[in-house]
Image (cartoon, rainbow, N blue to C red; front, side):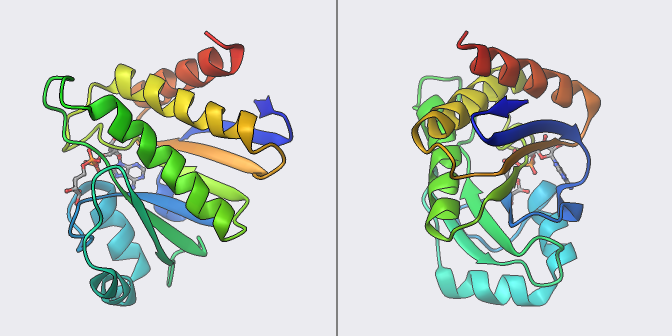
Length: 178
Ligand code: APR
């Protein structure tokens, strides 16, 4: 799907294999690795990634920090800390949206034009997937409408077909303005 000059795709796959400028990691506040996509990214990137993360220190929820990608095919990793779902009345929606907007502004600042996202907060952090998909898609479309001609490709990389269908529908709705 095109938004202006940006190609926006929703795929099923392993984000550690994406040869893009930056993959986004669903990290935790310590940035010291974990399970899920965080664990997969650290395993694929190798120990230097953890070393660089150690030097950064903590990252507040809703924000993002950038490191090199080391052994990953992606040049950089943008570590973003999603909210833990607590029922929806603790600012989770805005925090999740800011993961996407902060990650894209970091990418823009570093001149990175191809960015891949996982489904942030929808695993261990328990964010209901359909709601998370809508928040993610709306946050990204807002950036693409504002920063036109900044990104060549945005990828939502889902780990399973169910999530892909949810994120694909959410992207179509967001682009259609629903
Ligand atoms: N590629 C793409 N997506 C993946 C991959 C992968 N290799 N591995 C897992 N996922 C998907 C999960 O299926 C889920 O849909 O990423 C989404 C996010 O799930 P988590 O990785 O559990 O991340 P999150 O829910 O944001 O929880 C973050 O989990 O791993 C720890 O250190 C991390 O404490 C942090 C917490």
